[in-house]
Image: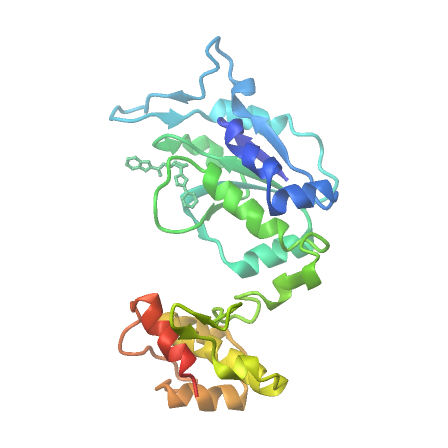
Length: 266
Ligand code: 9WO
C-alpha cells in the first residue's frame, strides 16, 4: 500500500499503535507514505494554486500527484490508484474484503483544499467516499480505509481471526454484547448469556443482531441469507417478509432504551 499526501506527518499514528502497526511489524503488509511536496517544482514546494475561472479557495495541483504516480516503483501485481473524495463510490465492507483477498497494490491519493485538479481524475482507477460529508482532506479517509483493510489481512488479527465473526461478515449489524460484571449501574446481563446453554446463546445473539438490523438498517436485510427461523423471528417484529419494506421509523432511541429491549429479548 502506498499513500500520496501533502501531509505525511498525519500518518505517524499508524506506526505508533494499533492494528496497522501490528500488520507492519508482522510483515503482513507494507505502507509507504509519499510526500507530494517532494514532487513540487518551486522553491516553496507548493501543491495548491488558485482555481482557473476565479472564486474562493485553492485547488490541489495535478503535477505533483502525476509525477509522484509516475515515480512509483513497478508493482509486482495489479495496482489500483484510488482518490479519496466525497465524489467517490461509497465504501462498503464487501469492497474491503475483496481487496484484502485480491491482495493487489493500492495507491491511495489524498486530496486537500477545495478540490483537486480534474486532470488527476483521468489518470487514476477510481474514487472512493466514506460517506456524504466533507473533511479537510483525504488523509483521515485513507487512514480509515487502511485500518479497515489491514485487519482483514490473514494473520494480522490473530485472535481466532475475529474479523470472521464481525458485524457485517454476516451482512447484519452487531447485536448486543456484555462483559463483566453481571450487574452494572443497576443493569443486569441477560440471564441466557450466563446459562451456559450454547444453542440458546447462539439463538439469542442471532436474534439480537436481526432485531437491531431490522430496527436501524432494514435495507440491509435484503442482502442477508435468512433461515426459516430468522424469518419467523423477524415477522414477529413486523418485518413484512422477502418483499422488503421498512419499519414505521428507523430507531433513533437512546442506547439505554434499546438495551432495555435487548435484555428483554424473548
Ligand atoms: C471543500 C469545500 C469547501 C467549500 C465548499 C465546497 C467544498 N468541497 C470541498 C471538498 O470536497 N474538498 C475535498 C477535501 C477535496 C478532496 C479531498 N478532501 C476531502 C476528502 N474531503 N473529504 C474527503 C472525503 C474522502 C472520503 N470520504 C469522505 C470524505
